[in-house]
Length: 407
Image 1 (spheres, rainbow, N blue to C red):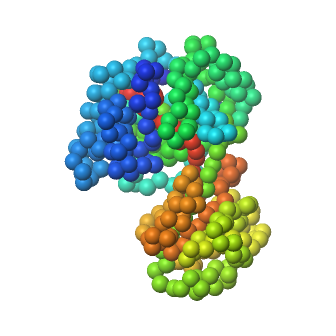
Image 2: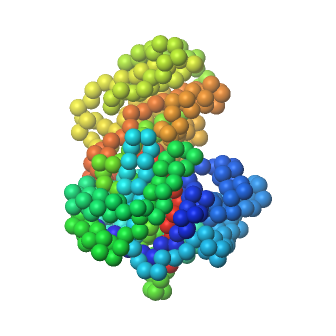
């Protein structure tokens, strides 16, 4: 069974929702956060990226940063930018990006189900990032940014959600990136009906937010028994057929200083290489194809069929093929989590970002991947396996600050 519990959200009044709503902490840099929050005292970036209120150059893991986050959360509450609902609810959060629309149920998931793997994972977490999120949650005594969960769609949940969205939303605004955001507070009957129906869902899957969920579990293990409500963590749960996964692309630096012709020769030894017409990017049309940008030109790479690899839910991922056939043997990337001569570029930035970073001389090759499919994520998670790092990029991103769970 899957528990999705109602909670008393701290959230902004409708007049401040757009001012408060902020991009997630981990998709923007400190400099970008500082610029976005400039002149906006209500921005939730003061909580999620509190180093912006300290002198430039402050280490984002300094004690003062965590303390500033707690101070700023208390300040938003004291000044009325966030206020608690009088009773627990489930909520609905809809996002529209172009012709894509997704509607998720906002609530709290159980730490016990995360530990028992009823909430399934597909990504290996890093200790340093877990430490950071654990400290952040502890200092705030709150879960301030939700974990993005998914589940195999359920017609009854779909119908309950559809019925609840017939009412006018509490929030309805569009952010500068063109994404529309709508939000509903569900009444007691609708909350109870959804809560009960989710208990029929066999399991949930972490789509995005592995470090936040792992940190929430660590906080609960540390403080359990003190009577506070940290046996749950903040989530938004979407049906799988509404997931939009973009590619997580790569850029890599050639440490051997080879010529473009020498690199192309190595690429041809492992894949079919097709030059693209000048000025035309190579967007992968299907799995096992890759766009490669090298020395100002695009090439389409086609990996050979491999029946053994095709049967393995991890090895068959395009990001695994890229690592096993290209990044590892050709460019010496042994550990993509730690090697400094490879970097990752979210698909929302487009192929132009790959061109920019290669043309600037920072990297030698840009690699455009075919996106991981949600069925592949399920297959890996159900097998109890882990994907390579940076396998999925979900869009649109959930805005932070529209709902906070305190304990």
